[in-house]
Length: 431
Image (cartoon, rainbow, N blue to C red):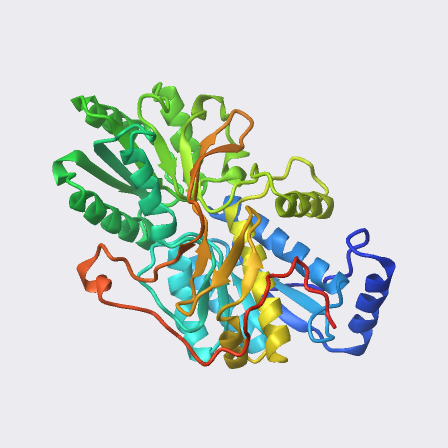
């Protein structure tokens, strides 16, 4: 059942004039509906609930700044409950019944694959905020999370380097669905291209919500006993991460012995763990809460004020929603309409500030240019950045390491209607 949430101007975020303006907009103009499609129950709620919350904050702030096109934004929140077919049903409901202008949502690739035919059939617009496996190109999806060349490949390159420990054997552990399997297909091809034989790669998959890790962690220890430096690449998703990391600690596996780099574990997931035994293990993202920039400090302050709980953290997919929402607001303002075809064309070349510093750019392949960061888990559940790219990396829709994909490209170009635009600070004030 859908829960409709009408957002209001947020006191304390902007001045009285903006608040008055937001109130007037709510009375005088019909709202622009924004769909929020994230699991609020089930195995993925541990990761997705906070993305619903940050979207409500962003919409609140935009309404306080005057809305968009002189109209307030109205959030329409649904719960697909970690049920992949239900994602498609809820997506259709949002577009056909609720008539939303845009949807921000999904986490797992299986949920994105479930809704993709719906968005393409109905010409809807989805902003997808989570790292994924690539190997997809849709004119109806903007991918604001990391592609493999913006997360998985740099992480493995780091662990292969002297600074990262010069790993020679590799354990690829993942949840059994499309994102881990495709990402590991790319990583295996990358490792093979760099002289790592299949004999030095151990690959294993477990179902969503898997809880008994004793045998698998034991196999990892045995595999690592061959005398070569071994590293674990984790594409384990959702609440299965809690017992996985607990079992690492139970079996005495430290980061010094067998480092684990995770692609789906961030500050939100660590909030439910005793992180002391995990200090030194790694994660690769495009954002960490601990990054010291003015924009990030402002974002964290706004988040804590909105959520009313100083223990709540920020994470990478939240920043992806921040960037995607900011770009969508700019594109709608530029196009002068919420029409999907017009907004899509206005998205190309949009620029928005990264919370880590610098500027994200939306490319015509529907992927962002973003920095890559690798962080070590600290005992307070935060990450200390140990490596980062010098600048931004352009996201690839298709991997160069898969022969059938290397020849493909994604380019949804239409003549661009904006010149050299400077990225504004968020939120965008309505004119």
